[in-house]
Length: 456
Ligand code: NAD
Ligand code: UDX
Image (cartoon, rainbow, N blue to C red; front, side):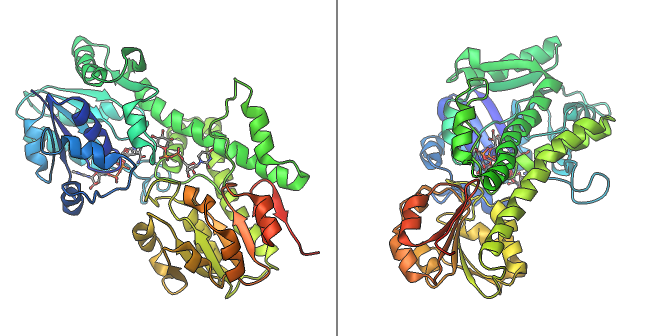
């Protein structure tokens, strides 16, 4: 029986390993993590992350061939294949602070693997890493006179939160990079065999190690670039009475452009886009390529601009003062169908509203626990209220920051009736029926369309 160990039981390690275990009953999958609380939660039906469909997949395999443990050393020792899926956040100190990847967790894993392994292993980079990390990994693993052979592969993960289970069940592609040596190719085929249990062979792409590592950063940079591109156009739409939804549709029907990732918004969030683009910027700079670095940095600059622009628009439309005004924030997660608030645009929006002395009421169906941890410094300016009707009661404005489906289904007449007048609604996701809201009496702002106002 093939034994897999995954180090890191987070948003990627948990769902990815659950899917492998579900699809391959003859493979034993041990997911290990130093975070005891997380591991304990994976063993219950109250999983540590909210992801539609995940519990069903976990339950099918848990206790059969899927196990969660804090015994990292045992997991490593027993495994034939080790996935490393630890966090690789942006460095906050020293050289490259604010841009480079913090590789300390990754390197600690490499050292632990070297320390406790007593048999040959395939090591799979599942975390998103700077290109050529595998080289450093190999040097750590093979330092000294270790008789054990480690073959390093890159197998970046392309799942998106909120759709992780569909993405894992039916991915556009699986990417595996390995050395062009006999042992490298053998390891690559071993991993490909596992995925081939449920994924058609033609969707399993194989490349050299560096192409695979770089493809992950590039994919996220291209996706984020599309969002920043349409957001840049949204500002121009507001100045010219063009409608960003119509523009996106018109360009998206060009098969060379395609319709996806053209939804104007308050900005992209999540733990990946900003971190991975900054990592790409840092790589370009460290290889002496300032022009490509500046090109990609602009994607993040545009995103910051969009978040700030949204708050400025709120302030200016509300007569240049929001001090002591009650603002209901609908949605704190960085996107719908997740409880994840990492790098959510809502964080910056709330901070900037708070700096204008607004009273903020945050509502979200799944992200309340994480939201409470994000802004401890604003504790006396922020209330948390799960019920959106209560959150909006007596408010001067509602700001929709996350595209939760349920926000499209609320009784906005009831909300309007309970609010201060003029009642403002700022739709940061362009997901509501703006004409209907306007007819109810709302002052309605939407990204890339501007304000519809009754006030003269
Ligand atoms: P996460 O923070 O949710 O999970 C990482 C886990 O690793 C944590 O539970 C942490 O305790 C554990 N860990 C850290 N050091 C450890 C060690 N030495 N030993 C054992 N466990 C350790 O992170 P995530 O969102 O799952 O992301 C993991 C990687 O995958 C990152 O590189 C990220 O860029 C990449 N990625 C994330 C997504 C996503 O949607 N979140 C998608 C694709 C790729
Ligand atoms: C992303 C990548 O899509 C995924 O392939 C990678 O593995 C991890 O990073 P994720 O961050 O989970 O996934 O979500 P994604 O759907 O890409 O959305 C990222 C952000 O962009 C969200 O804040 C979302 O609301 C925003 N977005 C997305 C837009 O504002 N407009 C769009 O058209 C699409």
